[in-house]
Image (cartoon, rainbow, N blue to C red; front, top):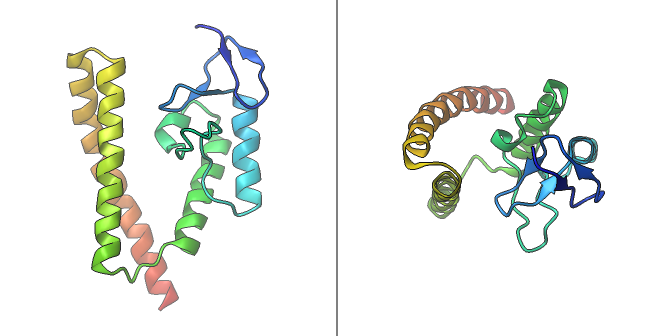
Length: 151
C-alpha cells in the first residue's frame, strides 16, 4: 500500500484510505468523524473536501469503513432523502434525477475504465448493474413504506 496524505488532517497513511474520483485521500479517522458530524447535525451527505471536486461520497467508496460507520452513513442518507426529496415530483424533476443518475453512471464507468483493465472493468460493470437493480428494488420498498406512513 502506498503512502497517502489525508486532505483533512494531512497525516500520511500507509493503510487504505477513502479516495474520491479526483484522487483526494481521506483517512479512516477523518472520514469517520466527518460522517458522524454530518449525521448528528442533519447535514447533507459528506462531500469531497477538494473545492474543485466537491462530489458526494457514495456508499461504494466507503465500504472499507467499519460497519457501525456505514450504518451511520446509511441513516444519514435516509434522513437526507426523507427531509429533502419531494416525492411528488414533476416531469422536470424526474428529468433532473435521470440526468444525475446518468452522470453518476458515466462517472463510475470512466473510473472503471481509467483504473482497471478492460476485462475487469466490464465484469465490474455487469456486476454493478445487478447490484444496482437489487439496491433500487430494496430502496423502493423502503420509500413506498415511508410514503404510506406519511399518508
